[in-house]
Picture 1 (cartoon, rainbow, N blue to C red):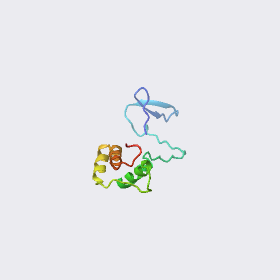
Picture 2: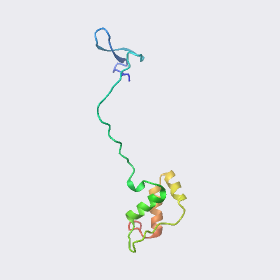
Picture 3: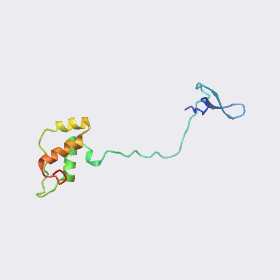
Picture 4: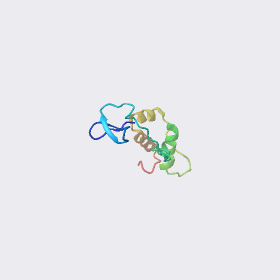
Length: 112
């Protein structure tokens, strides 16, 4: 890594008196520095909700479980082709398509 100073020159250490100087506009081997750290890396958190994990049939099932009223303890999932969900996911309208499919089943408490 090379550090650029506010004057537009790259910083380096002068070998004669160990001073930090900014003399060159191009990076050479004298301007390259390596930085190491002992800090532990934090694991990246997955931003995708747990309802959206898995394939599209699982995603639809998860959302139906989340929002459907269970009067007879049976899941009512739309039997139409899953291709329309794949197209909706590509266009960025997956949630709208899932809502439309649940509203057609008339068993969702939020889709009426």
